Image 1 (cartoon, helix red, strand yellow):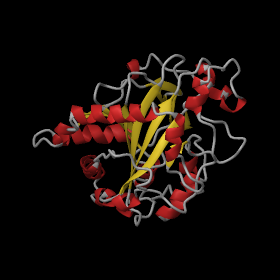
Image 2: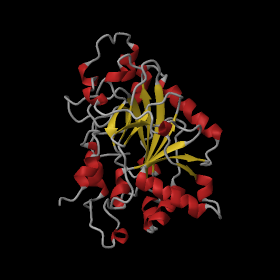
Image 3: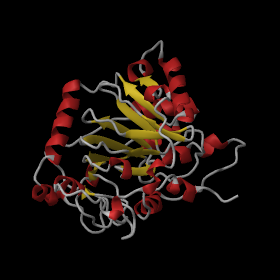
Image 4: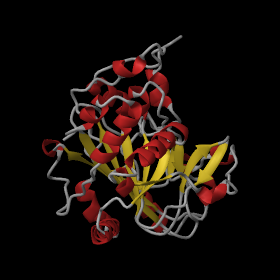
Length: 338
């Protein structure tokens, strides 16, 4: 259970607002005039980001080649699609079914799992830190999943979700030449966020999720239905991502950029809204153990200049919960002043 690290201000339910039928005028807090400030790069190779084959990372003859591809993806893109990951299709389909079922529950039933004051866990929105802040057009259900003692069992549904990233972390550690990286994430913290983005007739004026880089270590995202909406910041614009069937979309978070002293890159991304159809996804966030300080790994430094400060995990978590989603604001606060 995530205690004593701060919470999010309560806001109205977007799914209920979208279903109310009266959206001739969009509430002002959802209007995002900056949404079209930068172009959408539809021509950028049709949303193709690097593809990493997990079975090749485990292959006795191909692991080095695939590990090199993984390292380049983490350095140059910060995003990749993970295929042949070994999660059975029936498990993925069951997961999708459970998520869709939760968001189809009546609002009163979902309110049983509502966020409580001072907590970021539960049903609602997170990163709302002021009454004037612009709001995202979406609801979410956020849960701590690992370690087991972190789970708030009053919020947990009967079929919990779990993801394993050990193989990826070991491969990244080898690619960087610092095996201690994999150890930092062993028995680390994990949380899950289920996302629901209702349709909106004013889709060009709202955002499902504000532009941000993930303040975590590593994120695995699974598209629940066929509606696309993920865009990443690339070449001065927003590049739509087209998920491969059954693939996980993986992205580097701020913590990995900090630990690698900037060698791996966390990338801004956002979620846009469809005017006619709902979109659902689930993201699993992975962090180092709570006893691991957040700062550049000394073994990686060599003669390089240290780019980020080092703080304890608790202070880093408090930094996250006291900030709204806004670009790379968490990473900017961690940078050492020159």
